[in-house]
Image (cartoon, rainbow over all chains, first blue to last red; front, side, top):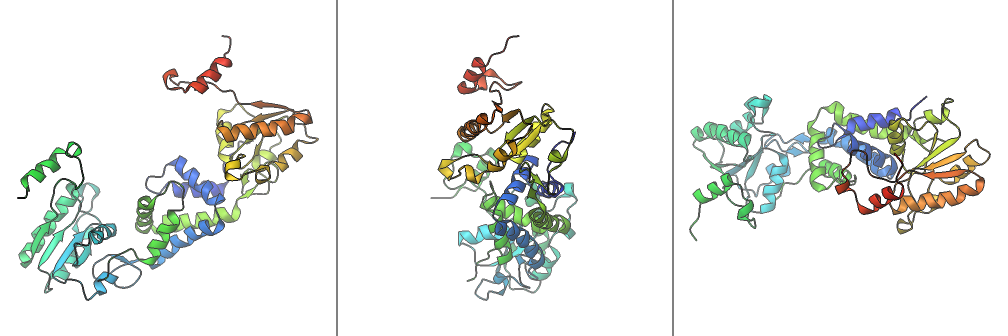
Length: 201
Length: 201
């Protein structure tokens, strides 16, 4: 007796969808059936958008950020401050910092953090172009805005040790309690750092 | 001053991804960056699989289930019982029932349930072909395996009223406590049904 399974084309689609982060077999099945039931323009539009993005998106030749052009709009912008550079792990991090409206300098995107556990060394990150970029530039301060986990911290320390000899000052984002957050739900390491860095009022 | 945003091709990809069920703006952003960072074969493979599935998958002309061919393997299978028909809402429901190994009859897939709230009436479901299929067939029993919510129940009742006049018996899946489940966590409606349907041991 033949049992009913999804036809090969749906199984194929499900198998590609399960490779997405956070998508298990059940979610993949739901997404696949949705893509078959939704308007054709939405489904084929997604397929097209994936191919287009893969074809168009490059890394900016100055900062390494993602862009459709040779150089990203921030690097091309003459009105930005040339003396401060903010180093981040991922393109999304730039967007979060832009939203604060507190930073008007330049960016450099590493595309990851040092991780000996996963075999990611300095050569795997966008570090060489960072060091080249600093030499003979107007940059006076580099702000390390890598993540605050073990790997982000190690990356910030590693880079600080390379950059300081160039006579450029290196800073790190302040650690402390979140604005609007409850002390009760703040972890003790963060609270300890917030105490150490306490401010006069 | 120019602010950094994602380039247009990434924004486009994110906008298509947010149209997927259960995918919010943050998840869409994460998926988009994953699709840009992952192996080219995985990303383009997904794009290709979406287009292929949209092109190939049709509804079986007998039961309405999804298939790459004109008729699904279950309908083509001569060894299945022609006297019982199981009516389900979605193709995925067939697969769950197949896994029980307790049903060897035929299927009919409605592709939804009656929902006056969402404006889904009998004409929007695969019902006409069901009634045609029953006329002059060997089918002696129709098992309603629609979902047990309000809409699934209404659909089962509506169909039962159409099918019984044809001299075909109509049954519904048994309601009761889940096997291996804790009584404590069973809702009172289900438990009430399980009491009503109690079995001699």
